Length: 250
Length: 316
Image 1 (cartoon, each protein chain N blue to C red):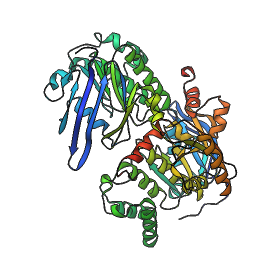
Image 2: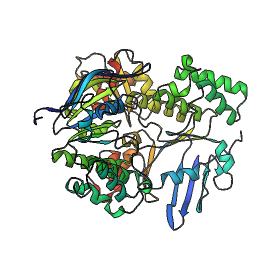
Image 3: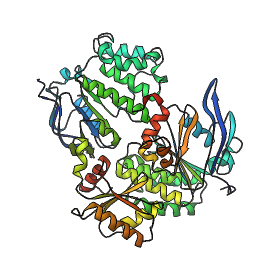
Image 4: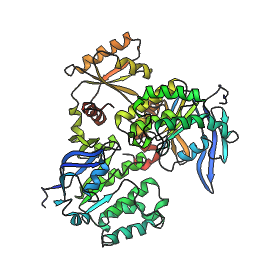
């Protein structure tokens, strides 16, 4: 794997813009995310989150501005960006018809890990997630909560510098949701930057900092405590409602 | 059926799919005019329950009535009197907003005009997009259209399976505001959700997990079900705090809650303020000197997790 220059923020975004025809989906956004930070990326449906993430993971070219992820430019070094990040979404992450073992081996291979490295990571994963009995079970037969934890672990199998999580905890029970966040903390504590989107506003409070996108722009950015203070709100949910639909404040 | 009869009555209902027990001996009533919530994660059995109540699937055991009618013997009579919004987007993406509404009305032998009074407050919010294809609407707008289509034949009972999943926090609030308006007009509503915070919008909720009902109660009084002192603990060193709390001798449960950690003590009789002072001292001995400890009232998620821990074989 290519080693990125270790200096500077893990994600650096400057005036990043994306237009579709006459519509500006992402309008000159700028922010930094530090190495090892858990960064919450919030916004209403249609605010431009997905477009912004697609640019950051090297899948969509920006119309203007720049961004670097893990030290690589998303416009000119998209392939290096992809090799140095992990990605997990609620909709797709693992192959349901493959077993747990086959999924880990497949992704290890895609990420370019050696057989020895795959075997070593498989062993540590099995121990951490208590997957011993289910290693040869097809992913579609394991409970949703475990599937989500496994998907996350596979997304960070290659020790990426940054991992993107797109609504990772949708529909899971509250205990599993918390176990998932503890996995996130443990990963961040090892220096991996975690970039996460969620519709659960209480989950925003687990993040070191959160940004809230409204109509293609970043309307607020700060620690959860700062945002609650600045917008005189008791919860991030209230902050979100104030920003995303100013007329609709409860 | 009179106003005093339950709108939904479920008795020892069971349903399996092969080896999977989707519903395990479920019993509850929904009162006429009530906004009743089914709160639980994916796979809890919420959708199966809706499929039995809407008569699209048959129970293996037990019985249920909807509007006083038996879900097996009188399924035909039930179908025209209920409105159902399935979890997946169920409208025709290639038809316009207006066409979808007209189609669903005609299926029930009526017209959008006949149902106008009931749907007007909701439809007015999507009316500016009447010509737009349903597939091109935003998530929140799709849900409002689906709600209109479920209401267009003026049902007496509305069944909503996860109407707010995947919808942003603002649209979720607006959607629950609409449900409250409908309930105030006398409609009985049963809605499911995996979002614990939405429980507070219901008059009563059933907490459901792995095919079983853990508890049924008014969400505002549910905290009383938590029979232990509960403390919120904050420290800049989150990981160390979690580990330290779990290693204490009288720990019952430790869960992260946003920027805090909720600690429940195994000694149910201990006074919470005393316990807070004791905990602060113990954490200090372990080198966590910035810990802030405060007694708090348990919320619905605290209760849900506590009930999950009590369930046999819940090795969560």
